[in-house]
Each structure stands twice: as structure tokens, then as C-alpha cells.
Amino acid sequence: MSTLNAIQLTGVSKSFDGFMALAQADFTAKWGEVHALLGENGAGKSSLMNIAAGLYAPESGSLFIDDNPVRLSGPRDASRYRIGMVHQHFKLVKPFSVAENILLGLPEQPGNAVRGSHRQRLRALEARIGEKAAELGFAIDPCQATESLSVAEQQRVEILKVLLAGARILILDEPTAVLTDQEAERLLETVRSFARQGAAVILVTHKMSDVKRFADRVTVMRGGRTIQTLDPQSVSIAELVRLTVGESATTHAHQPGTPGEERLRVRGLRSPEVGGHRVLNGIDLSLRAGEIYGIAGVGGNGQSELANALMGLPEPTEGDIELIGFGDLRRASSEQRRALRIACIPADRYGTALAGELSVAENFGVGQIHGGRYGSFFRLRRKRLEEDAAAAIAGFDVQGVRSLKQKAALLSGGNAQKLVIAREFSREPQLVLVHSPSRGLDVRATAAVHGRLRTARDAGAAVLVISEDLDEVLALADRIGVMNAGRIVAEFPHPADRQAIGKAMVTHE
Image (cartoon, rainbow, N blue to C red; front, side, top):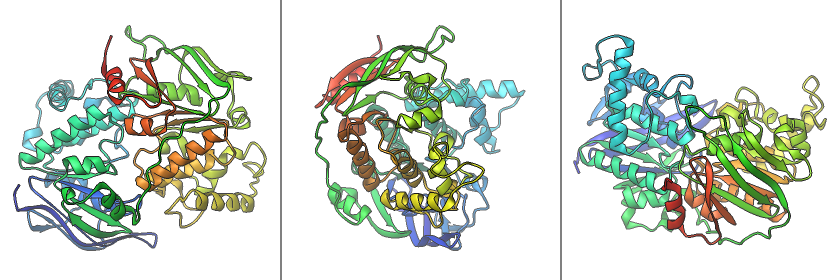
């Protein structure tokens, strides 16, 4: 590895509405290394990296590239210094194709200039995308509309966009959160090889195993400050957890639930055929009270479409989704779903779970407006609403809430997730439908979310967890179904064989 500094931030401070997000924070990554950045949600990691990527301007402190001081006027300026950041929450134009999104991100540099008409430029870029995708082991159609991609596939587009723009200082925010074991290993091997070729990779992650296996150095942040930089091979995972959260996190031994009566039955669920292909191609599953049923699979095999159909989001399907004692769940209105005590936690917190322009309190109470607890939309009982919201925020440890009137869009991803869970669990649910529950959460927040799901199960709820994080599925599920090519292709009771699950995830009939 080179001893030269690729990027260095010293004494960086930044506040938002009087809240000190960064306080004299320091960070240095060298050419040729993979440098991990650890910290709880709200520790300041994303704020610091957003300054490095030119999205925020620091109130104090200095930024150096190649040991030379620079001032960034914005992301395009950062791109000139070959800095690229793949954000946890993607920056894609949903109606555009993959190639069109990547074209938007290409800086105006000689190496990126493609002559000819717009169509010719796109065709040439599509070929480059195909080459880079194959190099990374990504299966991506450059012509596909981004809005039709799964969360995992959208992340791959973001990674391709940054690399094709010529980034040599690559910042990855939670890059493996929605990848399978095999995909994560391939990606991290690729970025490590990229670093060894002389680049610098900054890996913002909560996965201690990724740090131990792939990082050359790790910097820990807490409360907006830099705590320590060290060699990850010199410390145990338990010590990394202690440095990250300030205390040891206990590992939850899996205690199986006590399954009761069948509560949800899905039979022959199919989506319309497009080009000879069905995204959902005959889903069969049964969910019982008092159990957690986990669905594992590689992103893009119909998980998002299944979640949408079950949660009542627009998703044309044929087949049966029967809520025992009610009937076709697709016919249930939002008011009926609330009355039936169905909790829904979608993967896209900001797009479908929260209204970012509404306040934290309003987002918490929106589900009970029709029930009359808080009056009506035209005459809210704000005092009761804010009392309940404040109690839930404290009970679910939603941090970063300086006022119940602040917009929900200002919450970090992890705290936005905790607000969604606080709302959905405000009345004891009987059916819990959740997609990627701990994506982007730190160790302590993940443990809290998993604990809530187990508590709901133990209270008699039927819990369905869809996650592309196999560790999460293995930690939670009493039964595991593997989704491949739009179907449940295998089921495993707990304890399940990880290798057998992995094989079912990638085997194509």
C-alpha cells in the first residue's frame, strides 16, 4: 500500500438546525487501502462522507486530496477530483433506464465523451455498462427502467454509475446491506482489488465480518467525533462492537416460537406475463400465528413484488392471498387493515413508509386518524397525538428528533426505520409483514428491531420477514423459504443449513 494520503479530513465540524452532527472529526484514507468507517446511526459517518463527496460544506476544518488542500463547491467538483460516493439512499431517476441514469452521472471529461446522437451515445454506454457489470459479477440490463428494479439492483446501478464516472476515491455507504453472501463477497473482493490497483475505498458499514475480512484499517465514530483508527486484525469483533456502541452487545440465541393456527395462506400467486416472463410465478406459502417465516433470496427474484402484493401496494396479481377469517387480503382497505391489526414495514422507508414533508408526529399518527383517536384530518387532537408520539419515540429510541414538528425527511435512515416500526407496533399487531427490517441499522438498533419482531411473535402474531441479508433471516426465522425466479423453491426448518440455502438461492432450473 502507498503511504500517501488519498483523502484527509481534519477538525471537521457541521451542525444542522443547532444540532452538532460533527465535532472536530478526523478521517484519513490512503491510496491502495480499503478503509472501513464504523459508528451507530447518527454517529456522523454519512455527514462526514457527504462533506468528502462535496454534498455538504463544513463549518470548520480542512479537506486534503493527495495531501493538497482543496475546497469542494459541490458533487461535480468532487467528481473532478475523482471522488465518487454510492449512497445508502439512492440518487436515481426512477422512470429513466439504467443507461440514462449512468449517462447523467458522467462528468464532462475527455475519457467519457461519446460522439454521435443521443441514441448512439446510449448504445455505446450500454456496451460499457455490460462490460463493467460483467467484471463486477452484476446481472444488469442497461435498457431496463430503474423503477422496475429491486432495491439490490438499484444499488448495483449506483456502483456502476460511480465507477464508470472514473472514481478513484470510492465511498460505499452500506454496500452489502441488500446483497447475498455470494454477491457481497464478490463485490468486496472486487473493491479490494480496485484498491490494490492504486485506488482508495472507504467502506461505511455495520457488518463487523466485512470489516474483519476486507478492511486494511477501520475508523470508529461516535457522537460526531472520531474515537479511534486501528488495524481490524488487531482487535476482536466484540471489541469493535464495544468501540462502536460504547458497550458490549449480547448475541441473541435463537429461541423458536410456538406455531399456532394458520393465519395467512398464499396460493398460486402470479404477476402478469411480460415478454414470456412472470416476476411472480406461482408463489405458495403458509404463515402461522406464533412464528417468524423468513424469505431469503437474491435481489430481483420477486421479493419486492411479493411484499407489495401482501402490503396492499399496487401490484397486479392473480391467485389467492387469504387472510384466515377475513378472505382476500387484496380487497382490504387501509382502514380494514388497521382494524385487522396488520403491521406493514416496507423496504423503501421514504418512498412508501413515510411522508417526508409531514412532521414526525403526523407520520406516527397517520395510521389511526380514521379510527378517530386523534380526531380527523380536518380537526386533529394534536395534544394527544404528540403525547403518544413522544412516548413511542422514547420507547423505540428514535434519535435525532429535536421537535415533534420536524419533518420526517430529516431523520437518518435508521431512525426513520425506527419511527415506522414505532407506528406499526403502536397497537399489538396480529400479522406483521416486513421487508429488509434492519437495512442500514447499526448493531444496537438491529438488535432492538429483531427483539420487537420476536416479541410480536411470542405475543401470538404471525410474522413474515423478507430480507436479502441471509444473516438476518437465519437469526430470526423459525422457518425459511427460499425465493428464486418468482417462486418459493425450497423450505427449511430452524436450524437451517446455510450452504443448502445458498445453493437454493442461486440454482436455476
